[in-house]
Amino acid sequence: MAIKQEEIEKLLKEGFPDADIEIQDLAGDDNHFSAKIKSSFFKGKSRVQQHQMVYSSLKGKMGNELHALALTTEEK
Image 1 (cartoon, one colour):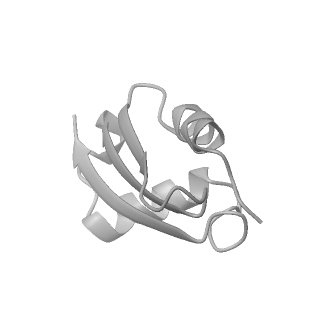
Image 2 (cartoon, helix red, strand yellow; image 1 turned 45 degrees about the vertical axis):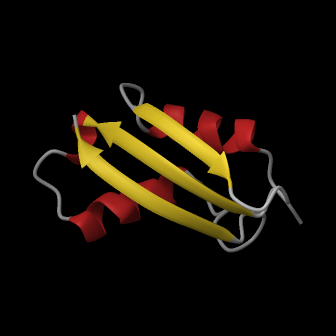
């Protein structure tokens, strides 16, 4: 199963309304993406906590429709 880039961006925008988001389909297969997310929601959080927040915002799609996501997160 695959997921469209637009769906990933929609879920991330719902979870992080103030975020600057850049997403790339790394293999052209709707399965392997990279995402750079810059949000004030990450303030004071560790890198692990930031990534957990991103996975949570994807509402169970990580590991199912979304096979791989290379993440870069930073505070806004």
